[in-house]
Image (cartoon, rainbow, N blue to C red; front, side, top):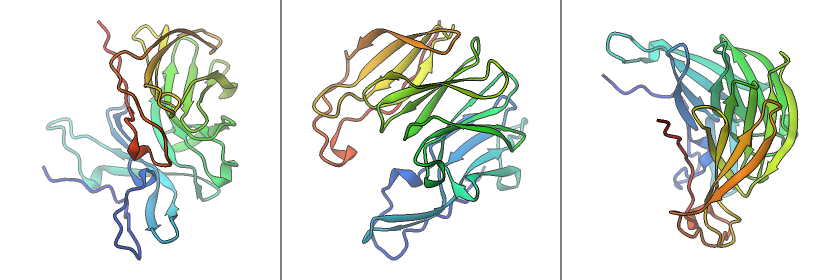
Amino acid sequence: GSPVELRQNVDPGQTEAPITSAVVLPSEVVFTPQGDLLVIIKINDALLNSETEGTTAGPGSLNFYEIDPTDGSTSDDALTVVPVSLNGVGTIPFAFEADEDGRTIIVEAASTILGSSGAIAIYQNGELVERVQTGENGSCWVAYQREGSCIYTSQTSNSNISSLTLKNGPLELVDSIAVDVDVPVDMRLSTDERYLYVLSNGDLNGDTSHIIVYETFEDCHLNEVQSMGDGFTQMGIFAGSFADLNFEVGVAVYGL
């Protein structure tokens, strides 16, 4: 089939500099429980200006592509776009999970409208159901534990993990800082959901990355049980650019 454009309309503006800012890149592609392909767009209609280092952009979106069951293809005509914003201001959607009812759990990294706090937002059938702020900046990755209806989100810039719950029905914040962890990025639950595996990129001061293992509980709290740095190279010293570091960004759990 033919490639399908994202309709992101990223424009480098009045500069010959290439677009290198990670904020304009789509952040995740996943399949929903309904079988649709979901592409998370952090911002749309971006305009970067290298002279001022400024970025102007429209709200991000959840791009749902219906998949043709006969051949697995999709098309621009099969696209449903759900803008992600608060009072018209983008909140930078970043990562996805789904609860037992197939509702979409989205991490919103931060924005001025959120007071520089990240948030968890719940969408159903393309409509926002509720949004709760984490109180922490830079919320990025998310994991959902079904037994306790617990939601965990990592704050890369603030070096911690927040926990929320859907156990009582409405979305509630349990702990703004459930645990402190150096530069957490991606994370995954074990197949039995008893353990949360977090990829930490260390202290950005010569440390190595680690996989940190937390035991999960029904009250959505976490208890560290292991930290392992084997197999990772030294990151180096952060000097204002992550491009100078050995920076891991993804983790997967293989269950037997």
